Length: 240
Image (tube, rainbow, N blue to C red):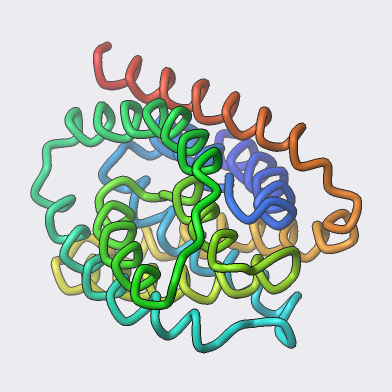
């Protein structure tokens, strides 16, 4: 029953992330932590997020900005590998606390980034890639930070969704390879990640029809609510 609940949340999370470009990890991580524990939850989510990003790329394949993706991934992928190596060395309770605190801190940070009306140039995209890649290696997802960056680069709708997904794909490939190299990705964890990722992929494909009818303000408020609930859940898990 717990696994069916994970799949149901994954389907909803995949649909939401397919519409707004992020959110699947924020919804799924607390559920995975409570079901499988923090040490398994992070690599499971890495595999699932990789599959979700593949689905988004396939949905908007013609609109990927491959130049932006290459610039971002060149620094983000190695930084993610470094962050994943840092994560493996952390105790489980500290992982819960770090994830919970980071999700809550991302609420004002996302709002601040959106309010700055930033214009991101290619070299700045590479700098952001390094920072976001390392943080993603540690805290599972930094979508609410990467989303304003890609929007500030000038990408919108399908081009934004596809390019952000392609850049994130490089991050999660590097992260998964690092987990595998460090022995943090046994066969049973891979299986759980693939099953969870399948539900995200279904949701991502289903989301395409809703993108053009997106109400940005409503989903920004929804994202803040998700981050707050997820953050508080993880902090409670760390302190109990």
